[in-house]
Amino acid sequence: MRPMGNDDLAAWLVVRRNEIEGVLSARLGPARPDPAGPESEVLRRFRSFAASALRRGAAAQPALEGIVANEKRVSALLSAWVDAAAEVAGPTAPALRAAIGPWLKTFQGSLRTSAAGRGRSGAPRMRRRAVNAAIDRVADAFLAVEADTGRVVDANPAAGALLGVARDALLGVEATAFVSEECRNGFLTELDAVAEGSEPRRFRGSLRDAQGGAISVECSVTAFSTRERTLALILARLAS
Image (tube, rainbow, N blue to C red; front, side, top):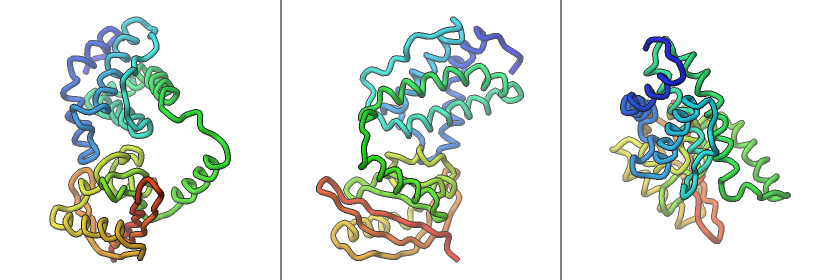
């Protein structure tokens, strides 16, 4: 990729979009967004927003109307998209990052302020932050999985490191997508068991990271139930 002005870079983002999306999918593996889902729509809108901003040197407020998606996951996907674009750009990646970086921050800021529930505050939120901070310090991978749907609703940085993707990119993804095929039925059985009983459970299994590498783990699972749902709280440690 030769050095480009902002007009050329804007056109490049559009022309090379399929290649960028291919690199993104390879990086994220099972955590990649559904091409027909709202997260992919956010990525498309960001590409259009960035291209327009680069051409004009300024940008209108990002168009986020009608988007219903997890703000944390989408923000992680946006960063991953820029990383993928930089990989495609090759030697001129630093120039690309410098040009896109301010518009990425603007877009992510608009995404945060438009997300539902941003105005909540008070003691319950402070308690949640304290719990999340404690979980983030745990060395083992932590996943909170909704028992009914099997989707990840929370994770810690160790889980992201183990699976090869940013922690927030795991949110909303079906946990079984990272479970080896031969272990999936057993994993689903454990989710059913923890949803129906209160006793902690332990089992061994095999995960797959975003690039398909096998990871043998020992898991402990505990149920956490509210009136709305039951979560399976999973700690996964590398098997000895």
